[in-house]
Each structure stands twice: as structure tokens, then as C-alpha cells.
Length: 452
Ligand code: PFF
Image: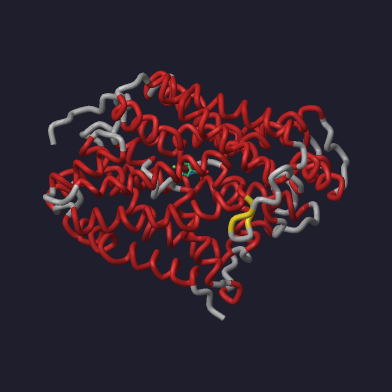
């Protein structure tokens, strides 16, 4: 293929790509969702299945996304179409990219609402409102926040503007600058919080909870959640990594780069769990508290501890930073597509898309108040968007990307980008052709036909 660089620009170095993609991967999924779904699904056995999904399905698919993006150097729809054409197939494969963009829009709309909760909790921690409160009081405070659409709208709007502004500034000035500042800050904050968790006295219990594998607690539903989450946490199945890959330089090794991203993302999820569960256990609270784990249990815990206010503020800043770098990446594929397709300016594309996702976000935040009656398959808008994206659209997108990379793209083109030792290439190819699609298909099958 002839394109040497994308018209959007390219990353300054391989490390910037690794950090930007890690910024996309590490988000609310790692720090908010991973600990609470681990809590809900019984701990260790769930963690083990999740790790297997990352290694056997997530990493190989991420390699496919990066190489497709880098080969074509275009937005995901055009990248899939061009790579298909090069291998003698139909440009219709671009449709996978379209479904991916739709997933990005839906994810952003609820993601930004949760990002807004996080901003609100930075303020709550700063003002010390939670010092010495009981779990019940913290639960009512969180409930009152959800029931207050005006406050939620303010925070959701702020979070949306923060994300749109970075994307509007472009690859180098916007995303790259944000990455350079925020990713080191994120790692430092996480290490400080882990150190703090180790002093709480609940560390051993937290460790055991996450790493004691009790398979009797494992259900099909837990396996589905683990697989869906491995896509969500690695930002796969929707073209984000493909778009970021299209800005990657040709000389960088895709295999090593992807291993670094997958490894860092997993490390952050595990460390986040090890930072959170000890705090929960040392205050005698329930690890299976669900989505409220971070917004109810943790503030109570911080409110009872030495230096809790300081570390509470740091903790919520950490999550805000993580969520911000991910939210940016949810917008980028569609912005790139709009620029390349409609030949409009980045600023116009970012604002146009921004207004759309912001408006959809209002339906999500209204799920807890004025739109609570609106349900899809028994779920409110917020839960429905979360459910269909993480559990259905991303895994489906992933299956198609795998099948595309394994069966449609000619081996010589794939290998030209991947440059893997031939035994590793074979393994990767088997994963694309069989392991990844079959694993996803089995889990989706049991989702649709739950076992009695
Ligand atoms: N990986 C992000 C997280 O774990 O929070 C969420 C996400 C970002 C999913 C970007 C998909 C995506 F394209």
C-alpha cells in the first residue's frame, strides 16, 4: 500500500503510541468496572478466566487491529475496505468499522456520565463531606446524585468538553500532549495508592480475594462478563486501536508493542484491585457491592482512615485522568472518518460528533430520574448501552476483525506488517481463524440461550 503516513499525522515515537494506546485501554474499565465485576463474580476464578481471555483472544485481536490500521493509514471504515481490496475481497468489510463507530458513540454517552460522577467525587473528597459518614449515608448521597439530573448534566457536560477539546486539537497537539502529561501522572498516583492500601491491614485479604481460584464460583455468565470485559478494557472490537495504529510508524514492532499495551492494561487492573479491596476489607465492607463499590464503599472507607481525605482526592483524580484519556480515544475513529470522508476540519468534526454524543449522554443520565421508565429489554438506557456494547457489539466486532484478519487478508500482507517469527505467526493465525472467533461465539451462544 502506498500511504506512508495518515493525513491526520503520526505519533512522535513508538513509546508515544504505546502510551496513547495504554491511555485508551486504561480507564473506568480498569479502575471502576474490573474491581466491581470481580467482586460480583466471586474473585479469583473470574480473574483467571479474564487473564486467559486477554492472552488468548485480546492480544491477538489487538495485533490484527494495529496492523490493519497501520497498513492502510486511514480511519477504520476505509482501512478495512482498503486492506480487503488489496487481498482481492470486497470493500464491504468496511461495515465492521461502521459498527465499531456506533459502539464508540454509545460507549462515550454512558462513559461521560460516569466520568462526570468521578469529577463530582473529586469535589466531594476535597470538601470533606464524606468524613466519618456511614455506608447508608454514603449510599443515600450517591442515590441523591443520581436522582439530580441538573448536577449530573453539569458534570457530564464538563467531561464531554474536556474530551472533545483534546480530540479537536489533533493527534500531536491534542492526544499526544495529553498522553505525555497524564500517563506518567496516572502511574505515579496508582503506585502511591497501592502503597497506601498496603498499610491498611486488609492487604492479605484483598490479595486472597483476587488470587484464590475457587472454580465452584464460576458461571457461564461470569465467563461472558470476563470475555466482554477483555474487549472493553483493551478498547477492542470498535476501531479505536485501529485508528491509533494508523498513526504508528512503520519501523515499530507490532507484536512487542501490543504485548506492552496488554501487559500494562492488565497490570493496572490488578493493581487497582489490590489498591481497592484492602481498603474495602479493612473497613469491613462488602466486595460485591456492584457499581457503587467505588462511589459508596470507598468514600466511606476513606472517610474513616488516616489521611483518607488526601488519598481520596488523589484516588478520584487518578480515575478522572484514566477516564479522560479513554474518552478521547472513543471519539477519535469517528472524527478521523468524518474528516477523511466529508473533507471537513478536525474542529468541525470533533464539535459535531461531540454534540451528538453529549445529547445521547443526557438519555443515559436521565435513566436514573426523568427517563427511568424508558427501558429496552428491561434495562434503562444507561445499563442497556453498557450491556449491548460491552457484551455484544465489541465481542461481535472482535469476531469479525479476527475472521477478517485470518481468512480474508493474505498471509503475506499480514506478515509484512507483523514480521513475527514463523511459529508465532502460525499461532496468531490459528487464533484469528479459530480460537478467538470460536471462543466468542460459544460465549455469545450461552448468552442468548442461557443454561438452565
Ligand atoms: N478501555 C476503556 C476502559 O477500560 O475504560 C474503555 C474503552 C475505551 C473501550 C475506548 C473502547 C474504546 F474504544
